[in-house]
Length: 373
Image (cartoon, rainbow, N blue to C red; front, top):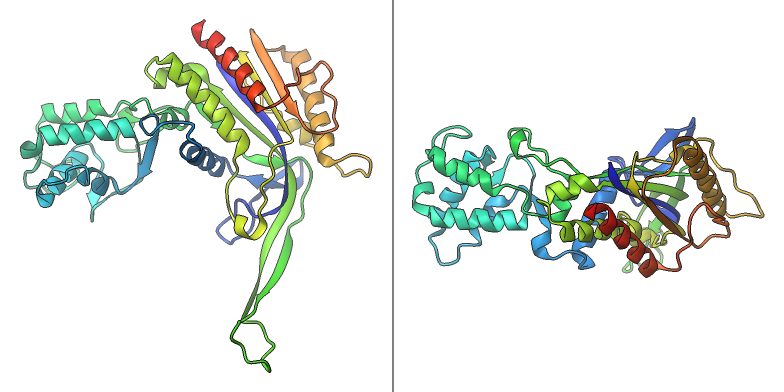
């Protein structure tokens, strides 16, 4: 497997970045102790958002995930009778097995923007054939078999990078699915955590002077933690998903690394402003087996007065890195490096990189070497 791995250590001040259905910050037991946790799905969402907001990928290189596909397609037909367009769009989606009910698909669909463009174009070219009275039940549309095959051919991933990275699962149409090229681990704290509570009150500005009570009160849970974050990209799968476009695969993998390293979920940030960037970012690229080094923290680290938890975490990670290298060997060929803002010494384990530009340049060179091979 040709791969790109990212290992991050990130100390986050009091926060509730990723909470469960009760409003509590997510956690997990690991090594017998409660750890802070940030779910993989929340991290992926932050990455996809960064692709757009940080202009890492163009609109054509991204996908959209929605149930509101009918409205998105209908708006692409200005000046055409809306009822006719809506009927054609719903028939097209029903023919594809994406049941439409009350103007929405039955489940979230993840489609590349190029796929949407081509789907709209095909509907436009076959508007009269598609705008026929619907039959009863999903898939019963009166759409000809040949036109249905044309609709299916449109859904090839559209060379959308986020779709290629995170995949697409369609329960009713597994043949239109896309195997994800990226795997993201749940972030875990390198030490045990205890949940804390912030009791708050809000004052009513228009209270009479004699009324000194709070207008409302409540509490919110939080914790602070040094997180170990890990992700790996299968470069061969990414290239396949992007239809062999090597330049786009390089751009996509590099964008993933940058977005993953520099973003976190945004839960409760107005209350906590936990905008803490990573203190350690390492990458490993080459051919071989992926390895999540969370085992470095199976025994939770304990605070020491002479060393920060972030420094202790880097030291533990480097020790685990060397141990795995000695037993299982490095990747071949292997390119690696790290940005380190802690007091830990990298020694000979990882070449030290000076900044993000240096890191991105090293990663891009490694990606080109691997994908050209």
